[in-house]
Length: 354
Ligand code: COI
Figure: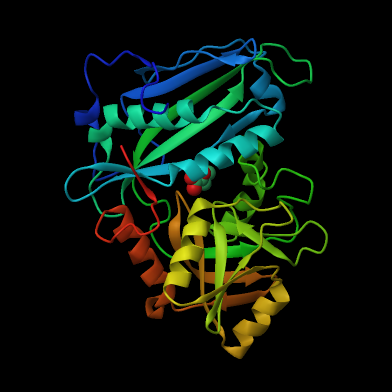
């Protein structure tokens, strides 16, 4: 049963929280006092431990470093006006984590370890949840292969860890996005839907080249024609065309099934909008831009939350937008923030009480 799991807890003798500047928290730079750590060996998960955040030690032959059996999740915890801690939709991330594990031939993490381990860890470090607007406690569960053998085969041992990072907004201002048509992120049958470390490593060259051209990130296109739109480097993407919101569909398995994507679809529908999950190509987008019907473009992600896109570049065509005038994405962002901060009723049961 959830809630009674035996977790060995060893706390720090002195918290480092007073040395952390909560007014300046770049994404993923600072970590809380504790971490959850669980080992998998001999076909079973061992007893979870919560212990001081610390370095790990491995031999250079660590399997994860060589062949990339490594997956992760991103989740956020918030504190409401009464000071109570909540985690946003963690069960959805739990399900996705095990889908990634399955694709990477790694063992599933039991729900009790993932959920109750995370709850206990956040409870212990709850003073680290920032209260500043748009700030949160970012939760990073991850698992990697720990066999110290360089044969190419699934590892027989793994480590599941959760670390916590108090963090500010990932993208502070509206973004400039480069439509990528040289590199490919994912193809059908590949690992595009999984949150495996390699997907992010493989994206870095494309985003570095986009940055050199003055863009924040790339918008990935399909592997064959480089015209069907997939997702942005760190987030799913939505287009408001006329009075409909359109977001690329999941069925080819090439994009991440974002929890914030799903929340955005739900809130947009609550707002009375039609949301279409379907294939959309760059030609349709350009035609809508030229016709003046491409109203808003934004990304959704746990780290990115709702990030407005002020410029999209495809080849030599630069499409610019005046995000100041946008109503839909700003209302969506406000609604999601208000639910997370406990200012709006949680009608969908998204807030998990710590
Ligand atoms: C997230 O949104 O949580 C992500 O994992 C995206 C990125 C920071 C890796």
